[in-house]
Length: 128
Picture 1 (spheres, rainbow, N blue to C red):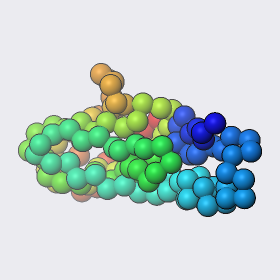
Picture 2 (picture 1 turned 120 degrees about the vertical axis):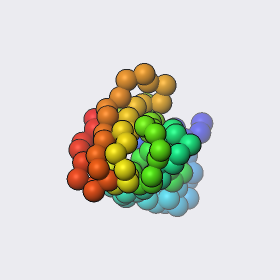
Picture 3 (picture 1 turned 90 degrees about the horizontal axis):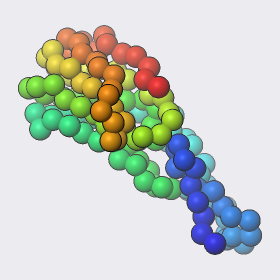
């Protein structure tokens, strides 16, 4: 029986008896390191192309696991950032240049939370 992953942050869970005498490497790389990563920062460059989506992968490094998002770039129109559609929270800081709105929404969602600002990095908040 293969390992499974947690719903929210995609940490690997070993099945009983799996990877006998080798679980340490899996535990360190696919769980402990991922827990550490979840407290990190991801910088997302919002471009003139519009929408961006945080990556998400089971047991591998990804952007959606991080708890802090810094928005950068100089979009010429309003943009959307899609985050994983699971229970989570993010500390968000808008450092985009210009006065543009960014909407944070879950993947597949139609509603979201709007952030706008002057590019000074002054607009920040917690998104749950």
